[in-house]
Image (cartoon, rainbow, N blue to C red; front, side, top):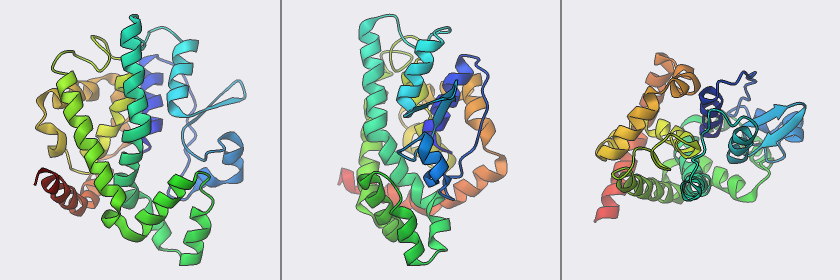
Length: 257
C-alpha cells in the first residue's frame, strides 16, 4: 500500500520491464530491520536493487529507470515540460507524500503498535532514522486524527486538488499532452482517498476526476495498484476510513468558514 512503491511499479509496468517483488511488511516494521537498513539507511520503501546495487528514494528510482530504459519514454521532449514534470514530482515528495502518510498511517500502521506496551512502542518508533518522521509517528500514534498533522495534510490535499484541476483544464496530463513520470508519481496519492471511501473529496473537481479515471484505466495502474487490492481488502479499508472521513469533512468546512 506504499504510494512510493506503487509509483515505481507503475513505471516498471509502463516500460514493460521484468522484475522480482520482495514485500516489506511496514506495519510489522520490517523496514527498520538491520538487513533492510543496510540496503536503505532511511528505512523507507521502495528499494530497487539492480546488479547488486541498491537505488533508493522513489523519485530518484523513477529517473534512474527513465535514464537506463528510455523506451517507451515517460519524460517529455520539451525542456520546459520536463521542468514542470519535476516540479510536480517535487511537490509530491515534499508536500503530498507526508500528507498522505499523516492521513493513512493512523488507519493502517497504528493498530499493531497499539497492541504493544508503551515501552515497546517507544523502542520501535525510536528506530525510525529521521527525526521529523519519527516525531510525526509518535504524535499520530498518541492522537490519531486529532493530531495537528491531519489539519495540515487536509490543507495540502485541498490545494493540490485545486491546483491540479486548474492545470488539467488546459492539458490532458500533468506535464503536457502525454502521460509522464509526474502522472505516475501523483496517481498513487489519489488511491488513498479512493480506497478509504473519500472519493467525494476529489470527484467534484471534474478535470481531476477525469484525469484520475484515465490513470486508473491504464494497464500499468491496474497491474501496479488496483490488482494489488482485493475486494475484501477494499471493503476493510472503506470501513476504516468512515470515521476519518467525517473528521476530514469537518476540517474542510472549517477552512471555508
